[in-house]
View 1 (cartoon, rainbow, N blue to C red):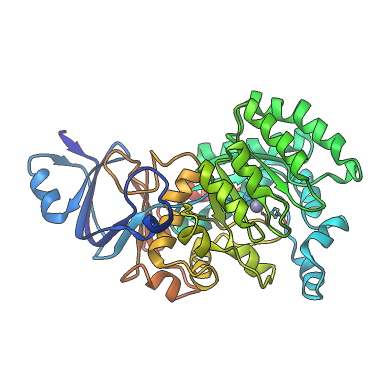
View 2: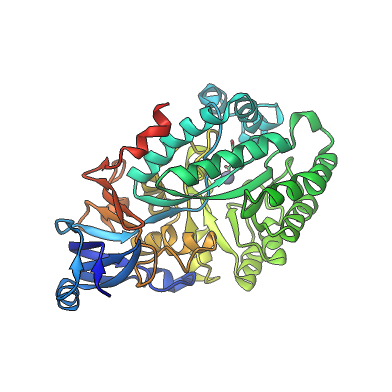
Length: 434
Ligand SMILES: N=CN[C@@H](CCC(=O)O)C(=O)O
Ligand SMILES: [Zn+2]
């Protein structure tokens, strides 16, 4: 090696989960820490990581293009948000009064509001409108320390409108500094045009929409809202197995409100992840553990819906040795926030996860929920140089001092794109400003 593109020095504490694989159960709290660390980066990847002394002696005769000193701050892997509904039109603050008067989430949906309201706004929006709106959200996420984000379709619910959402996600991935991983979620709700004819919509999904989306190469994963009054277990199984047949790996919104058996289905079909899981049963946890399904927990959603119930993270971790991941679930209805740091706080408060478990859940386990554990999610030689620099003395400080953004800087693919809490590159404003 004769050249370093970027040398990161002055790292007070470097904290990372180790390796590529999902960290299960008690492993989640075993993070590695190096005090006074340095990281050498070449062509967007981590070339060397160690103590400052080790880095300097190793690189004695190597040409270093740029050096950045992070001033003693804490550095972790770039955060990964593995569950969002990033691309959508409009917003739903008009439903706030209804929610506060006690109308339940599923009742608003059954009355033609909720997801249907966002479907209407998303269909009416141009691709550029959707790009402009999502771009701003991506910048918020980036400023929060997120370097990779999943984005689901599911507010189109016709082939053309779903493809529009997915094209927007692709364009964002091609142009925004963040990496965006796409999921097809045509099974997000039964569209109003198919009211009372869910089976006919599932036929459309499996016969036409899934094959076309796969053919277009616009999604990696297939997701479905398996819930009472939305899609049944049988319908969800049909949708996800068809997706699998076309190379789209299954994900599932499972047992969020009612214990339908979505977690068990996730195990049965070998889903990469199952999300929400507030009402999941012990059998569901066992099925997930047996088949290596990653639980993606969304404490921002239960908080925002004002639910008294929370996902049983402690049992998932302590009893079932599951590799828990965390995500924002950013969407205009049940969780209108891009802030992964609020989610970290809520994971501590309501899920009783430790700061180390939270870090693992927001990095390596989240990366594995997107099939990217070998590439991102930990600070390891050979991995992508995605790093978050926190203005916090230790990990516990992140969920402790809540409601503010602790991210000082972000390095993505070896480039400094947030510094001093500000987007460094003009690129990050271009699309959003149109
Ligand atoms: N539960 C279903 N889907 C989203 C909410 C979508 C919406 O309300 O617009 C979720 O994961 O919470
Ligand atoms: Zn969701």
